[in-house]
Length: 117
Image (tube, rainbow, N blue to C red; front, side, top):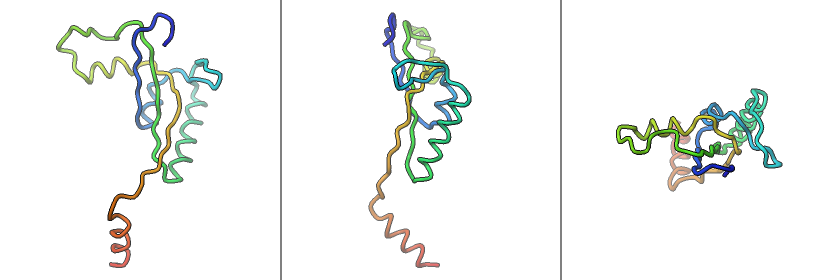
């Protein structure tokens, strides 16, 4: 956490959504710099490359906060409103790519569908 920060919002999800909420990117040296349109385009290119290899890709971003961006004592604030308040000005950390293993029965079902014509 940055100096003076008490809270950390961590967001993960579809890269095309997460990247739109990011204003900074964490560099390999550990410093944060403004996230430019060119950097966003590069991230999208990497996502496309991973996706073309049948990998499932998630983006991870964070925001450290000295205080919560909503009134925690206000019972009328919905979970969606809290999430919206926390996902502003995120720092893009990176991408996570994974391969989803075939589920039981899927390969057989695909073969059966192909042989059915």
